[in-house]
Length: 207
Length: 126
Image 1: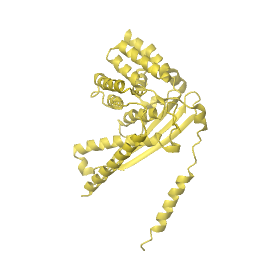
Image 2: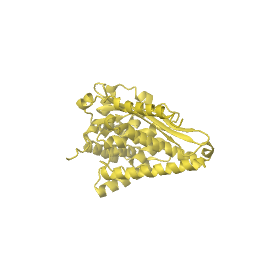
Image 3: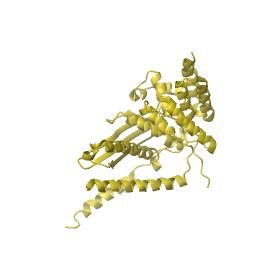
Image 4: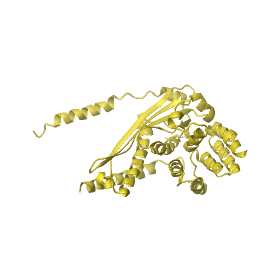
């Protein structure tokens, strides 16, 4: 009886291992052919319940993309220009035709982000902080998909419902969502072979 | 007692994450000096009341000073963002010069900087 879970556990483990090894490598031919140098990151579309989520995620996307060697259009300036031209919400920004975006920004590629999940769930003695982001990079001239990725993180929160009634702890959880979001953005772009390849400003390492 | 164990676990994870970050920093040098840039952008976007242009400009000035004294590169977008804040504060000449600096440092931004100089800056001058 002691080992009655051994077989199911082992088969689940094998399935997971098999799952990892059978993911087909992403075909990056088109990406290397078009090799974007500059990325226009549009404010994310929000599918979460937190209204602050898109701009929290937007502000933290510039650093990893710049450090990968791309020119990233200043997100706050892009947002302002959009709003001054009457495009006020991310959903509308995502609908702007590529040729129009190309005309104004002169970018090589556009990064479309969707915040799928962002927030905390409370149980009586525990809580869970969850962030999920989806991204696709599109060539601005041809409209072809250059890269896409997604990342999801769920971490147990530092408090349960009872403690969350104390405001101080609620603030801690808000901070925790912010940190989990940052880690998720990191996962999204620095995902090894399925992450975003480095750009033209990334220093070539010397042998 | 259950929550206390959870907090302990979280602290341990946090310490491990910090250690990993420290190891990571030693082997990978950043391309840019980020300073307050992200805090400034984030604050101004999500809590504009707490981060008015003057306060954000003050943060960026500190970064500028630090970058100049340590010969570090400021991130893409820094000068354009500074230009936008200067424009909001009515310092049109300084804003124009900031947009031009962004274009010179990062030729990829030239088309966008030209657009800003031709439309937004013109509007503020008239």
